[in-house]
Length: 247
Image 1 (tube, one colour):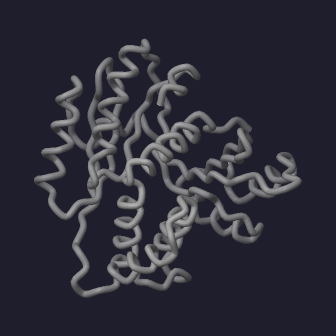
Image 2: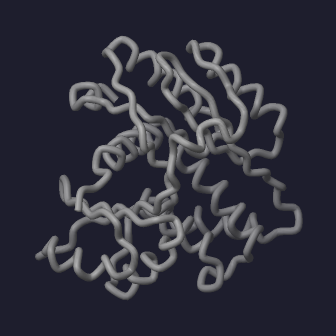
């Protein structure tokens, strides 16, 4: 089965950039806090929190930082966050989908709109990009010692794996959104802990850009990702290897 290795690679490279800017911990802490407030601090009984902690560990977040985020989410004075999405287009018709978690909706929409506008994009209405992106479960796992791709694929396919690909020492497993939990449990049974596991928005149609336009759109995406309220940004660019190397 073919996989979304290009999308996984984009995410890993962007993740590395965010870590250098000190942004990724802020976003992960917010997700842990929201997950705790929503479902309680018991990881065994809170699937969202378990996933958030797993992703935090994959990003090498210290245990005491994770524990403080859970404690913050458990407190009566925990900040109330709203989860919201924004949809629009960047230059050259690139679809750009933003997921945000905020304690101030006016601030967030103002910042998001400004990023779209500054780089020649336009913010649209919610639902305008539904036909472009599909929700998929994506699991990125470091290949264990003596990893056999065929055996692994046979193991996970019955739990809902739709795509599996091995690249650069990682195996990327994709599932339909409904099978996300099944795959989590299967990987736990196999004693494999993903470095990253989440529901992503995978484009079903893509656009190719000239280098100059690619650079312009990526500046817009960087501006959005730099906002502390923005958790994730998705796009439908089919980038070349040369363009990916510039990220």
